[in-house]
Image 1 (cartoon, rainbow, N blue to C red):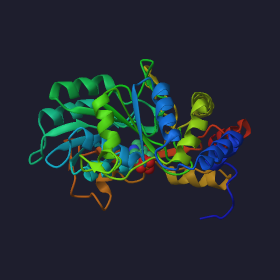
Image 2 (image 1 turned 135 degrees about the horizontal axis):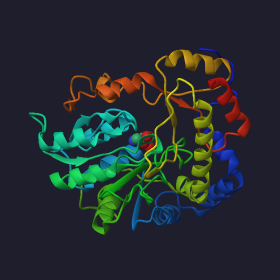
Image 3 (image 1 turned 120 degrees about the horizontal axis):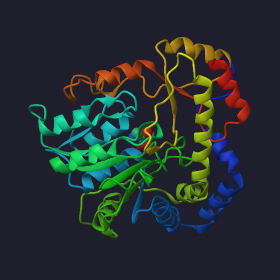
Image 4 (image 1 turned 90 degrees about the horizontal axis):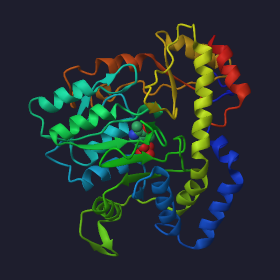
Length: 374
Ligand SMILES: *Cc1c(COP(=O)(O)O)cnc(C)c1O
């Protein structure tokens, strides 16, 4: 590994802070001065503003995106004795959350063009579940890299088989499908607010969105010891709260998110233009989807060589993700797979490469990446 500092890192949350420093610093001062640091005005304000931004009645803050998924499952009554279908080509958190809730994951392959769950295989698995699996009670489509999964087909499949649809929106804050924001399609939607996400705190955070008032109330209880009233646990809860400092920071950042997503799309368009006519496969877009480019992911057979060439020129890259969940030591040989055995997930893991992508990239930095690619 070279120690030369990169002139274009692949991610840069510090630049995200510096770009909005006056607003973020003011928000932090306000939260500090309030004298109230967990579940107060800032948290309620963020929940209200995020729900309005998304266009859904309720948002409930929590500790991180993994907890958001586990809490959503538990709030829907999905746990031991239930299976949940999702993908292997995702952050390991998606699958970890299913097991945190006590449920059994079953991993479906991806559509290799868009890297999201294959709705045809999903339908087959719901109609004919692998032997020995408990009933499949929920499906978690992941809007990977910032582009909506094929929710038209997935929602129809879920309805047909009586499974809940829980959207994993951790990479897709503001992404749309037919002009409607993702996170408003399923019974419930989960967002990570980790620093590098499209909407990121300066620490951990998560938020859960739903149109169902009773479910929102249950989520709010589950995230804090099952309390509906202080010190009275009606449900078996956990401690997974969004703190006031993070909520205040997120409130400062939220009004800029649409413009930041537009900047990501503009950077993506420049990468697209540079890649035209090369042997590198650019990301495929669904015509009905508004992509928010959490990552700009290309596909190259000789990934290591391209990665090394870019590194020599000061450009950082990432691999999201190098090992599909079903091949990780913690899951290998133990998790159920659909009939396609996640072969496209394995192929993708060997070839995907994420270019630098964040709104603070300058045009000169983007040009530097484009030149190095061609
Ligand atoms: C980041 C991420 C998560 C987990 O979020 P944390 O806040 O790190 O717990 C879950 N799913 C996906 C798709 C993610 O990208």
